[in-house]
Image 1: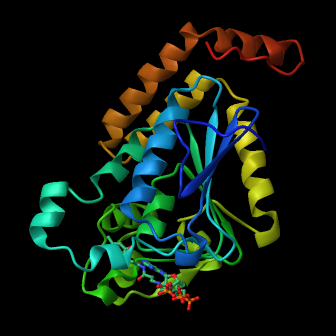
Image 2: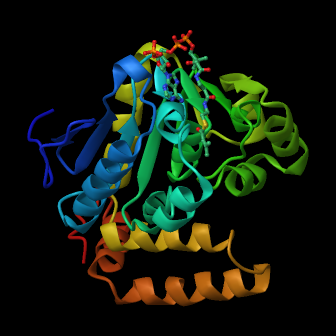
Image 3: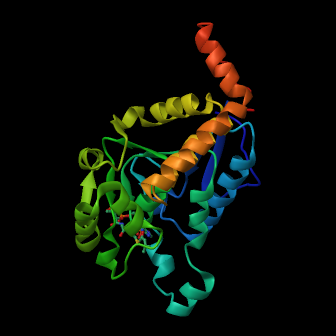
Length: 264
Ligand SMILES: CC(C)=CC(=O)SCCNC(=O)CCNC(=O)[C@H](O)C(C)(C)COP(=O)(O)OP(=O)(O)OC[C@H]1O[C@@H](n2cnc3c(N)ncnc32)[C@H](O)[C@@H]1OP(=O)(O)O
């Protein structure tokens, strides 16, 4: 891993590049990567820079072994009043992660609570270490999720489990999260980063515009009716036949060789 990337220097995150993969590591270890406004601004700024970089094909977001992120920063929120929250539109910048076109992977080890769970759910692929712990415990603090947790968790695991987690603050371990469909896979904690980078390398090796279209098509399933979603997919499917990478991918198959995508 080399090369700091983006407009940094950042104080709360580390950004590294390896080939077409960018690795963004949350770096507030003493606070278990609690997500204060500085972290939010730096994560959003860095990912938006990476998103515009044609040499980046996948972004991996991770934390420490103990904590992906233990939530939004409770100490920062504690003194705020309604007008502070409303006028600053607290947390709204996080929504910009959902607009990234580059595929993103959350590599979650340890605690992913509250805003930490919500940040993981803003990513496209969730890989969990066997040590991962997920939950929306905001209710124990007298508040509710505010970075989309009530919506994305419900879509991921269904109403029954989301309701229980949001109303009781109970956490779930990696095995339960996988059974519930929140994470795609569990890997041993010591292998998490290597596995996430391997998945990222695979994704980044695909045609970038086609990967963007695949991401957009899957995400559309959360926004629209089945008929509209299928129509949207069909239009994108037709559009990929205008890419050089469709010609290359199918030629490579016929010629029994690996494709060499040009991301055009
Ligand atoms: C409100 C919205 C929209 C979203 C939210 O995310 S609210 C926050 C949700 N998260 C939580 O409620 C989890 C809070 N943290 C914990 O319960 C525990 O820290 C733990 C179970 C994750 C880990 O416990 P452990 O005993 O191992 O570690 P601590 O001594 O408690 O923590 C170490 C260090 O980190 C600070 N910390 C932890 N989480 C947060 C946080 N979310 N915000 C701010 N600071 C946090 C903790 O205070 C301690 O630092 P100090 O020793 O300096 O106090």
